[in-house]
Length: 572
Image (cartoon, rainbow, N blue to C red; front, side):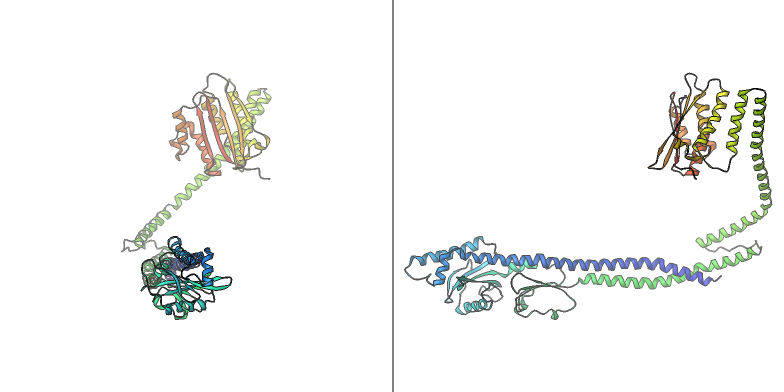
């Protein structure tokens, strides 16, 4: 025997027991962290592609719808087209001025666009022909107007959005440039200025991830909006981002505009993941050291015990193990010493045991001879009764001999129901000859049920118990014993019922009988329930604990014994 192999096995087992759970736990944690990071990316993607994008497009759509209201006044558009809106001494001039002011007031009060700081209308001569400033009245210079017209011209007649961080309002604003056209001809430019803070608040609420930044670029790649406003006006480049960011890009409905969202993995999550890896490595090293030390200390006393066992094999039963510890190994040594003492006692009593076995075999042979002798004697008595014309004696002897012949057939543990019923008929013949008042017995079951298999000798003790304790003590009335069956093929159960109209049991007696069926010591039971207990125990031993006996009884009415058995067809 190689003890190094035992130590290696113990060492390997201990490593597996400790390292495997650690590895599984670490894998679960790593998987959870990876899944959480993927979920964060997916969540950010969803918020960017749906929430942030929809918010921006709704904001731009609100700007467009607000500016488009200018077409609700055809006279104003016609005046801008003819450039005659402000000729002196004309009533129409007054109407157009009033229409422009009403348009600006309507936009300011009713539009979905919030935080408007200024609105003005520029005609084809590049002059401001109307304006509206709710709080601060800035100075519109020619240079300022020319810059706006240049930006509008570069957009090729499409509405333009500008983010101006050096505006005339002394605060960042968003400028919406809306070209006004009539019959395909440019007639003016509507400018709506809004605070950039409202737009920033509207967009930055989606920036929930670590070190995230939102950028909005136009068709030329120039940054029109950025979380870091110092980067506005520069060309966007994802390659300039530091580290390993997660980059999301979503094209907007506005032609040529793109939404960029960049963020980084949370460093606390990365630190936690690295910590898990470090703990796993450290735990692995500690497990290796302690496992080797423990396996060596465990196998050392086992090696000593193995050597002592070798001496026992050659007949030296004087060896003992010196126990110096109080742990399980020390306890094992004490038990080893007790085992050696027991072996010595067994050797001393071996001869006595052999003699006892021989005596038991002799008694077993005698037990087999007695039934055969009694069966042969009953057959002789039956023949004598027939010769001497004593039919009752012949019937009793014949019935009793049939019962003994049925009992002596010990090879078959399972019999057909019809064989068990025939055995009960023989028993009832003897009972009806024994007592002058006959007991009627009735069998109710079809041929298919009679051919089912049941354990042998389970009905006769029940019938005997019903006769002795239920029907014979009945002083008045007809004595009836009924045996019938029910088959539950769905559950695979055969129910046999033995029903009598005898004296029945009191509530206390019924409780005692039912209680006794669950007890293990037969001698602690009342005599009336010994037969029931024997049958109940035998059914459970043969068929399983799901089957057995149930007792139902009413005092003065009778008793019903229910036997539940597995549904078993006769083997071919």
